[in-house]
Image (tube, rainbow, N blue to C red):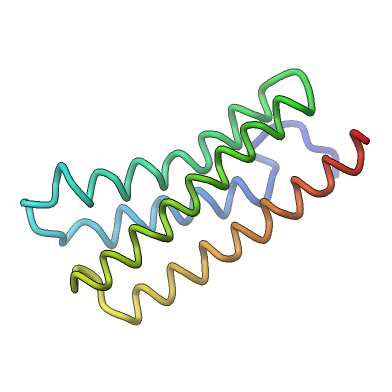
Amino acid sequence: MAIQSFRDLDVWQRAMDVAAEVYSITKPFPSSELYGLTSQLRRCSVSIPSNIAEGRGRRGTRQFLNFLDIAYGSLCELQTQLELSLRLNLIDEKSHDRIQEHTNEVGRMLNGLINSLNRRSS
């Protein structure tokens, strides 16, 4: 199947799932975290699929790769903030482990796409 849109990318679809999951797990966070960890978690989770989409909308492979790198950085930021949320007892270990596995999957998918695009552009 040819990729017609960023919506056709499995990594974008999984990243959207992760962002929705982050919104769900941060809903019960205390209001004191609304402008802190809640906001940070939500912003970096949204940044992942957003950068995949924006990069796919650019004209060249190099630009796409740059946005994929940014998405990967946002993914690492998300994983760090999820770890902090666990340490602060804002999320339980089961929820943490589940979403971390999903972020690991997105990371593997991003790495695969980046490696594939690098091979094609060499």
